Structures are given as structure tokens and as C-alpha cells.
Image 1 (cartoon, rainbow, N blue to C red):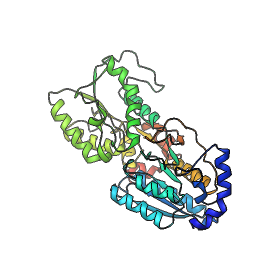
Image 2: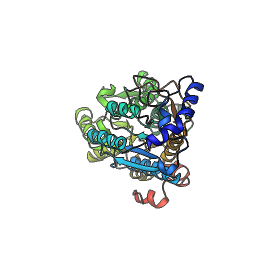
Image 3: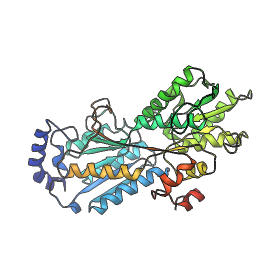
Image 4: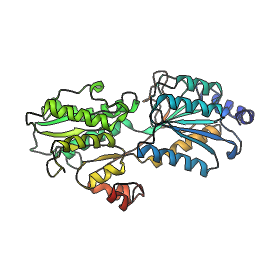
Length: 385
């Protein structure tokens, strides 16, 4: 299909690149030529590479992107890589070999796809980084994500609110002085988003740490130390167990835990309950944050076990990625609302950032059920229908 549509789109893409003063796709000024420009939708194939099926979130993302593209008439090659880097690189290689016209990639390791992206650029295939920035390559055309620093700010704020230091409006509560012991967890070090989440959260927490209201009793605050490879629930549980043994066996009270993702949160909670804490917040379980509004964690929030989660409506993310893909297919420049933040080490990648919401118990119905993201039955059971 690529050879067929290149001749149709070249003139339009060249005009676009001149009008945009060197716009560009896959690292070149005319790569949008390879994406469509007048071809029938049924002749266009879009490769969608997702990292894993072990997370409800990524299953929902993949299905939403595939359904939206197919509704528009495009062929979709959706692949999950089981959180295995070689598998994902092979899948993307195969997508290119099989004639993909656009690639939408949620990478496992944002530094591991350089050769695949070089191959895509050589064949004029636009590359859209989906929620995870692909690093160290000029051949990333666009990035669709949530405002990741704002996600971290929301998580830090949620921790403070859950511990009673801030009210619902974000104002400090008078008379709550501490000190309160907390521990910090971050996401996977090979995911560019993890650093933004942690920096955003720490921008909120550090003033309270500096004035002594919060104390990281373990002393573990460095990102590399608190990071959780592959966002692993099991690794988080093991680290929390080790922290409880090494730092809290003297009877000290742990008041809160910053967790960047619901799977990590569940590992932390399992470790805490395993030593007899809780089993609910009302019964003394520390405040634990989260992210992604996974149904198992939404039930924990409804049951008063997990304090909060950050809701990133992946339907909106999928919708935006489809808009970007269509722009490339039509030889147009996708709309960006951030052209400064996301430097991947080789270039600043034009991006579209989406907003997020924080979910506490009282927000489940309005944010998740009323929007159709989860049903009341799913929340009650903690299982996706």
C-alpha cells in the first residue's frame, strides 16, 4: 500500500512541509507522504504496538484504538508484547515488513526502538508515541499523552489530602502539624513518564518534607532507589515488606505511601495488611495513592482500603491518537498543544497533552460510573465485565 499512496500524497506533503517551515514525519520533511493522502481507508494499515496484557489499562487502550480506527475503515494490526522488549521490537519489525502505513507505539522501554524507528523513517512511516515517550531517536513524529507532571502533582496532592494535611480545595488544614512518616514509590525507570510523575509529586511533597511535617523514615528519596521496574506489583510488595522490616519494626507508625500506579498500590497494600495493618483506612491502614483507575483498585477505594487513584480516561487518549494518525494519513500536520516539554534526547517531540482527574470514594460515581468507564456492578465486584 505504501508505494501506491506515496505518489498520491507527495505533492501535498511537500506543500505542507514548506508551509510548516520544515514540519516533518519520521525525521524527514516529507514522511507524511507515506501515510495516505487520498487513499481509501480500507487500503491503509495502522500498526498498534501495546506493551502488555497484564494491565487492564493497556487492554482498554489497545481495544479502544483498534475499535476507533476500524470504525473509520482502516485495517489495524494490534499486538501486545507481554512486557518483553525483544518481543515488541520483533512485532514492530513485522508491522513494518507487512506494510504498515502508520505506527502507534506504547513502548516497553522508550530507548530500545532506535533501529525500528530508523527503518520506519526510511520507508516514510509516521511514528506516534502513545503515552510513553520514545527516547533517543529523531524518528518520533508525535507524542500523545496525559500531562504527566500534572499527574504527579495530583498524586502528591492526593496523598496530602488523604492524610488530612489538605482539604478538598487544596488548602492546608490548620492545626495538623505532624510529623508523619511516609514512604515513596516511583514507576519503572525505563518509562519516561515515571520521572515526570515523581517530579510532579515531589514538587508538592518536598515543602512538607523540608519543614518536617513529613518524614521519609527510610531516607529513600532518590528516584533510582524508589523506582519499580516494569511497574511490578510483586516488586512493590517485596520492597514494602523490606521497608516494614528494616524501618518500622520499632513500632513507628507509617502514615502514607506515595504510589504511582494501581498495581503497585495493591502490592503495597498487600504488604501492609500482611503485617496486620488495617485492613481499611478507618482501621489504621496508611494512605496509599494510585493511578489508572483499574477496577480492582476502584473497588478498594470504594471499600475504604486504597485512598485514591488518578483517572486517565484512556478513551480520550485513544481518540486523540486516532486524530493524529488521520492527520498523517491525510498529509496534514497534527494539532499539538505542547511543543516545548518533551525532549526525547534527540529532539523536542510535538505533543498533545490531556487532563486527568483524581478519584476518591465520593468521586467514583460521578467520574467513573456516570461516564460509562466502569459500571456499578463492576465497581461492586472489582472485576471488569
